[in-house]
Image (tube, rainbow, N blue to C red; front, side, top):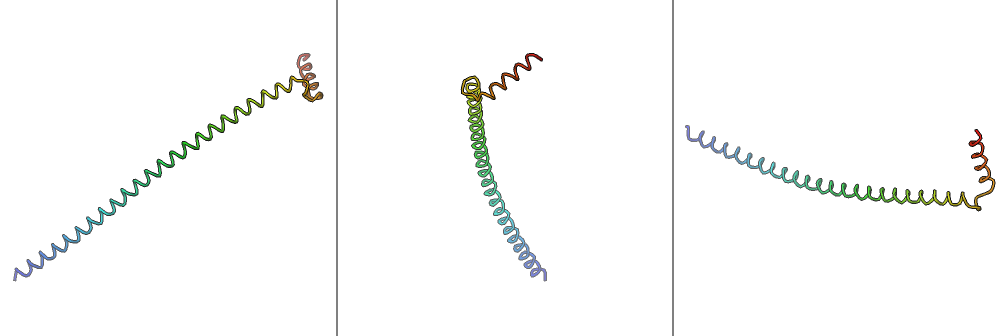
Length: 104
């Protein structure tokens, strides 16, 4: 009477134990995949950060070059403005404008 029920109960517990083992193994697999994903994301983040740093350096370098170019351009304009090669009508107009401001 009781013995078959006990055997059946133990068999059921062993089945539950096996299922728990499979679930835990599955969870460990999921955890492993998440860990690998985290590592990939961390690697991607480092790559993105490095690319952003490179882009920033390129931008700053380009900005510096542009600043130097503008500085050179302004110096050239000043040199040409004060030289005899500047177009006469523009130079005369500039000097007329200065006279008007002086007399005002």
